[in-house]
Every structure is written in C-alpha cells, then in structure tokens.
Length: 315
Image 1: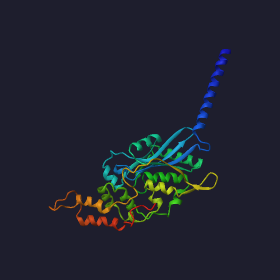
Image 2: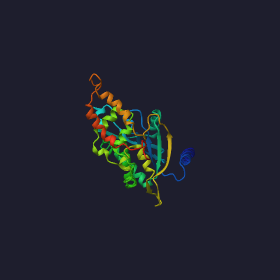
Image 3: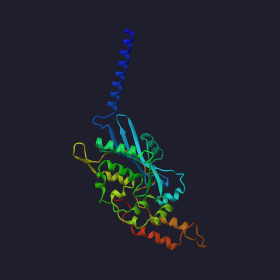
Image 4: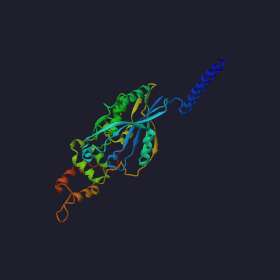
C-alpha cells in the first residue's frame, strides 16, 4: 500500500512539473501584454501567371494559447472547371475560402519569388474572437463557395468585408470618399499589362461602369491598394482611445521580379503587339482572329481618354 501511495505521489508530481514546464515555455514564447488572439493581414505581390496579376491577400489569426497560426484566404478555385480562361476573362467564376497553416503559405510564396508583407492589426479581444467565429462559419460546406467578381467579390474584397464586419464598419468609414483618382479600368489594365492580349480582351469587355472614379473602399479589390489604405484607418482600442488599425508591418520578402504593379501600361507598345496579331497583313490575311481595325480602335478609345498625365499611382 505504501509503495502504491509513493507511486501515486510520484505521478502527480510528474504531471505538475510538466504543467509548470509548459506554462513556462508558453510565457517565454509569448510577449507580455500579447492578446490570446492576434489578427494580421498578409499581402502577397503579383505572380507570373495571369490569374496572379492582381496579387493576393489573406487574414492571419494567431492563437497564442494554442500555439496555432492559420491563414484564411478567399482565392481558391478549380483550374479544371469548364471554359476556365473564358470565364476568367468574363469574371464569371466560383471561388471558395480555405484555411491553411501560415508557414505552409509563406513557404509556397517564397518558392514563387513573390513579395510577402504582414501587417498586424489592432483588434480588441472581442473583435478578434468575432472574426475567427465568422471565418470558421464561412468554412462550413454550405458557406464555403462564393460567386467571384473582379471588383466587388474577389479574394481582397472578401478579406476587406470580413475585417470590416468585425470592426463595426471602421474600414469602410476610413476609406470611403478618399480616392487616388483611378478607375476600375485603369487598375485592371495596369495589372494585366504583362499579358497584352488578355489586357485587350478585358479592356474591350469593360463597360462605362469601369470608367468612373472609385474611392479606396472600392479600389481595395487590389490587395496592395487595400494594404496601403489600412494605414490611414483608425479604430477605437480596448482602452477607448483612437489608434491606427495597422499597428506594424513586417516585410517577410521583398521582390519585384515579375513587374511593377504601380505603373500604368505603355498602351502604344502593348496594344501594338495585339494589333499585329489582330489586323490583316499586306496580303490581306489576318494573323489571328479579330475584328476590323475600326472596331478595335474604337474599343481602345475609352482607355485612351482616361489616361492620366502621370504613369505612377499617387499612393
């Protein structure tokens, strides 16, 4: 009996020692004052493939108590879906949300030589919990898919809307009415400049709606623009005081390998390549399927009329 008692005491002491060791390890890895849940925005630069030209972003939630870092992103699609390229050009696709280990995502983008920037966001504990609850709800099979739209429902606007909802509309209040002077057409063409033929197709397919000036709330369909816009947003902190939403930014990788997202395309150069493929040669034989020159020229006029005097975004 005494031997059994000693054995039981030894086991209890072992469990207590392990508990104290785990608590000490957690205390060493978590800085004093760090909230249990931490929210940040991950912004990824453009990639070499046409569907990566807009860049990408994701919401990162760190659970310091559980030691888990998860990246939630709304950019998942099925490349094997029927008429993928046609649907992509038309913006008629079905996307879904996904949750992955942050380290896995970071490693993938590093292998692709894409820039990676993480901004820590000042969420109260209640706001962070509400955001995580919403993202988990969004991951349910009945909620996971959404109808993609270039401008109002893409990977960046879905991230924007989720963050804004948890913040009680603070992002919308801080970005509405402030503008770079750009339009949906201007942003689309500069982002697709590396693919002149696809850029031409998008340009010809856009209607007058794409030519109105948009504010930063609307222009946040571009991940890099949304990231910069957050630097001007203010929120009410846990202590009731006003503070910047974007607390800090960490550049995990800086890369400009593929192309400069902040420059408008050289329309004369880029479209000359397209016209060579579309217009007849000296023998009257078209080099590629296309419309007569007058129709093509007429289609290019909306973009030409809207060209600003400067070739760089005023951000």
